[in-house]
Amino acid sequence: MLHFSKLKQAIIWLLVVVGLVFALPNALPENIRGGQDVVGTLPSFVPSKTVNLGLDLQGGTHLLYEVDVESVKQAKLEAAADDARQFLRSEKPIIPATGFRIDGDAVSFRLARPTQMDMALERIKPINTVDQALLLTGGTKAPFVMTSDPESGRITLSLTTEALDKEIRDAVARSIEVIRQRIDELGTREPTIQRKGDDRIIVEVPGKSDPERIKELVGKTAKMSFHMLDTSVSITEAMAGRIPPGAKLVEGSNPSEPNILIRRRPLVDGEDLVDSRPSFSQNGQPAVSFRFNGKGARRFGDATAKNVGRRFAIVLDDTVISAPVINSPILGGSGIIEGGFTTESANDLSILLRAGALPAKLTVLDQGTVGPEMGADSIRAGAFALIIGFVAVVIFMVLVYGIMGLIADAALIANVLMIVGALSALQATLTLPGIAGIILTIGMAVDANVLIFGRVREEYRNGKTPINAVETGFTKARSTILDANITTLIAAVLLLQFGSGPVKGFGVTLAIGIFTSVFTAFVFSRMLTSYWLFKAKPKALPI
Image 1 (cartoon, helix red, strand yellow):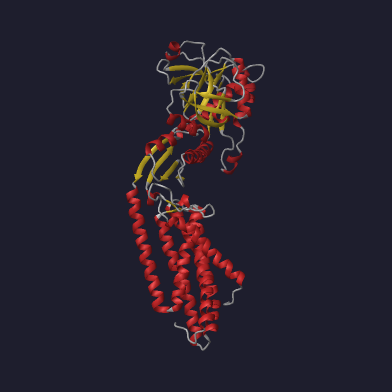
Image 2: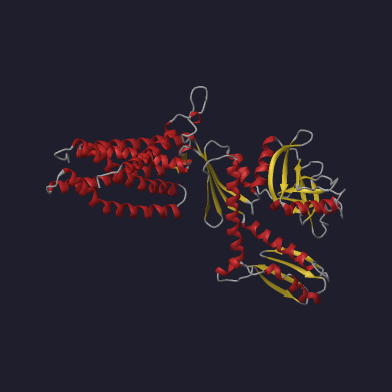
């Protein structure tokens, strides 16, 4: 137990030194005189990552959003209505239908010829395809309950509760991913984005940030689509309520054209966008360039080739931001959007388009800002508690165990350095509960040494030589230390799996601390003890 080969010694020292090197950038000041980044001046082979501080330590923005359930339901029903129109006209004979309306949880329409009812029901069957994800609910497997009235020719598709719940869950999950991509594009480190309840999302962005810009960037639906203008009626007639079937009236961003009538079904939508970047137009004004995937490029090229000389609208969140004339087919799948942008708004729009559209509207329920002063107070309080606890443990170990207590203190210092180094290497976020986790692991590391030294003292008093007593003490304490730390590790894993926010931060430092404390208390301190025993060859143990 006390004999270490040179290879083992080298590996142990290497692990400790690596922990020190990764922890080093956290001890350096951010800037030197002249504003130069200190970490950036380190040699390239030296790690430059530092521990990320959570919202409670460095301040930042806290937002609570609620997914608009009504808009999720409305989108599902509108999609069903559009699909029904297409399926009824998809083949000969065309089945004419009118009176499409959405009422509550259902969409209904009336056949012009009720005698075509059976044919119509067969045509629209794909709308009600069994959803495999709903098979697990034990309820209705299809998303709609389909009813018909042969006499009036009316067909009704009622959205089931199971299907609506699934749409809401999917909308929240997709919203979280879109929000994460949007905030990551801003260069923000370690944002916290998580579900709360069935339809709410918590967004925490640590660091110095503009809460209003984040709120605007996160909350914007950013659903972009390309539509042909509908010129079958005038804008005056459309505003009077005479909107043709398959068309809709939307707002225009240009004051000279406040309302525009467009075809409801898009030529291409934002799902086919693969890239978007801030750019400049030919006259030097800020603009946004975009690029479609292969499918989108073909559809956009075909649509513009068939409609040369006509206008099409670029619609963002039901507002037309541009309505140019198609002078020639737009091939290649790329283009530029001009709309009176500023440099910042062009950059924000490109971020929104790259991240994708939110599946539903988000409503801000709560907004708060944690100032950096409060975070600094938390850091000072946590650091003070850490230092006091560390010093108290160091003094106690020296007073009770003498030279072996000093060895335990050296292992304790290595433990803290390895924890900080691991947090830096993993780019984990340190929160105030995380600091509490570090303090707890200090106590756990010392507790392991106390168990070992207790066994050593017992063996020494039973008449064994110092070397035999130390060797036997480490051997007999091993199983107890491992059992205690494994049970704590199970708790830490559960915190990581099911916890969130500060609770998860506590679990991260606790899990890392368990591994480092076992290593330093049982391996590193044992090696240091062997150095002392074989060099000093004491005739008695000072414990």
